Amino acid sequence: MTNVIEVLRQHGIQPTPQRVAVAEFVLGTDTHPTADEVWAAVRDRCPTLSRATIYNTLNLFAAKGLLKPQPLKEGVVVFDAHVAPHHHLIDDETGKVFDVPGDAVKVTGEASLEGFEVREYQVVLRGRRRK
Amino acid sequence: MTNVIEVLRQHGIQPTPQRVAVAEFVLGTDTHPTADEVWAAVRDRCPTLSRATIYNTLNLFAAKGLLKPQPLKEGVVVFDAHVAPHHHLIDDETGKVFDVPGDAVKVTGEASLEGFEVREYQVVLRGRRRK
DNA sequence: GTTCGTGCAAACGGTTTGCAACAAT
DNA sequence: ATTGTTGCAAACCGTTTGCACGAAC
Image 1 (cartoon, rainbow over the protein chains, first blue to last red):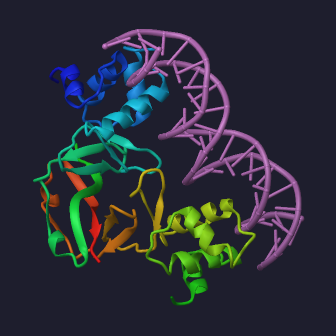
Image 2: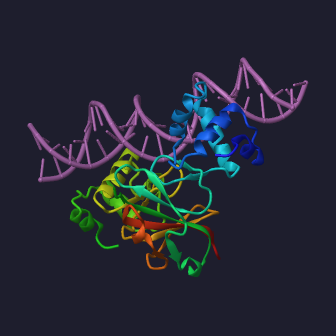
Image 3: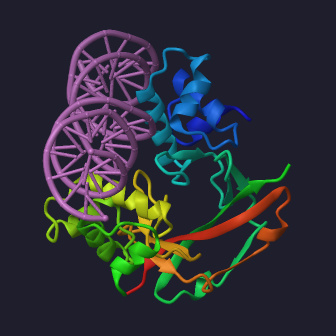
């Protein structure tokens, strides 16, 4: 993780201590955390940080293109620091979300859909993690 | 739409008037409605039907394999009567969800993912509907 | 009369918003 | 002084649940 403060500034975000704490966690993980998981992870470093600020911050980051909210599970939004196009695998047992590189799976035929102009697409795979 | 009552019975569901009303709407549409949209659509035919019954009924249908809940939007679950594997296109402007036949888009490479056993997959396309 | 389904209202969990205190410029 | 940020609490919205009434076997 390079200098988080610089990254925030480059995206037009004032680097407050709370935002830096959130950014350092959320930009440095590939666990696709929920807002509450971010809160739990940042609490020890910044105990006064409230849920409201978590949501404000995550939504701000999303609006500025630092994060992408993903409706992959029912009832919660998970935040993905991986902004470039890629795919997701969801473990049936644990519900955990794993990144799948964009080139690991190939999609063909999306250009020939009648009546649609496809801007982006994503493959959601569900299955089991082999150990 | 064949006889809805028969379909319910075949899935081990007692066909009450409320369930029949819900089934006739939800099994006969491809609009991927939310629970509230189902409620609104069934209200005129069955004005006493409560939200609780809507949720009970939709969850029952899902448990019995008549419907598949899909986490395609943030904050709501949409119900899909299309149970066979297929894909979805979400209109950027309206948020509406359209079915994309399973063979209109081809996915390759999912079998070769290291460490994963893929049970099912789905392509989520986002873009604009051309008119 | 027991079982199952309904409907109301209350509870719930994730998210948002209003607002007062508080930096920072 | 103005602008922007925080944190609390309350509101909000989609969904679930507890429970009493009612229908069906």
